[in-house]
Amino acid sequence: MAVDLKMKIMIVDDYKTMLRILRNLLRQLNFMNIVDATDGTMALQLLRGQKIDLVISDWNMEPMTGIQLLREVRSDVKLRHIPFIMITAESKTENVIAAKEAGVSNYIVKPFNAETLKMKLTSVLGEF
Image (cartoon, rainbow, N blue to C red; front, side):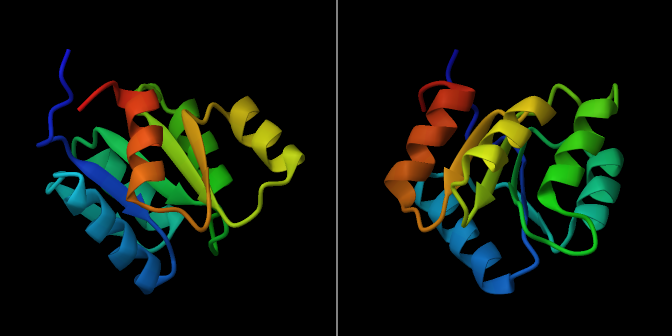
């Protein structure tokens, strides 16, 4: 099944520059339906208020981290099916394990480019 480029993707990062970079990378890959949140709490409110098809979230945020957001999403019956990609500057094994245990769909280590993002999206969503 082909990936719907009209799918709604939520990007979550407390760093506005990173939100802009992510939005631009997703647009390069022809995804145009993008919503953003500046922290996990805001992301959760948006997730509960509209249909989101994919979450791409930073790990290090305040007051709710990306891993806390992931755990909230996975524990919510209405949200747990949503693919979730975690972005982090740290590639520590224990972080990768924690994210996997929490139910992350995939993991991206900064810095990354459009090619890496496409590869991770393809592994989660299928070819596009």
